[in-house]
Image (cartoon, rainbow, N blue to C red; front, side, top):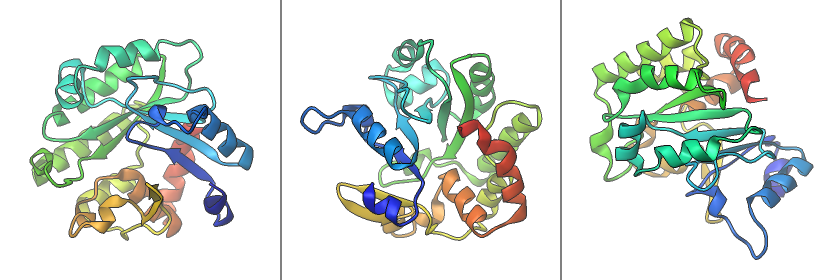
Length: 239
């Protein structure tokens, strides 16, 4: 954290595995969040929600929900109900449903979004697209399915649903026209540092990236006007 802050980073996301499993002696995840907040970071937390679904020290929480109950449970194990029970906390705020769109769940983009929109525990929903790490290639959407999924997300956003994605980035995802790997994203895993993400180290995988935040940051740091304007109206949901 010291190194990242000294290099200019100001937004820090704790990922996993599952970050609520983190231990260092008596230290737990809230100790990391407290230290990061003291240092000056905006802190996000990415969790599967099976242990806890929220921490009050996080500025925002990305909670993995990969479809309605039956589909989510096929993808992630029988965890949908326990996640929702863990989220049943009056203090929960700025929790963002985080869906990885793939072959098994892309038809549930709209029903999941409408479900999230009626749940007061959620502030919004954010979509990624499946990045085909080795052994998961079968989950990748075909080109026509990607176009359908992007169109559905854009329709939902136009209809006023709380979709966190930037439209310009969704269109760039389809065209493949963005700079990658994004030099403004840094991932540290097991003390090893990766530019943009771990997929950038795998041959050809970077070209199949479905991480929408990486696309958005690439556009924003290249000062693309449309991306900046959309971010100004969309990103306040994170704070």
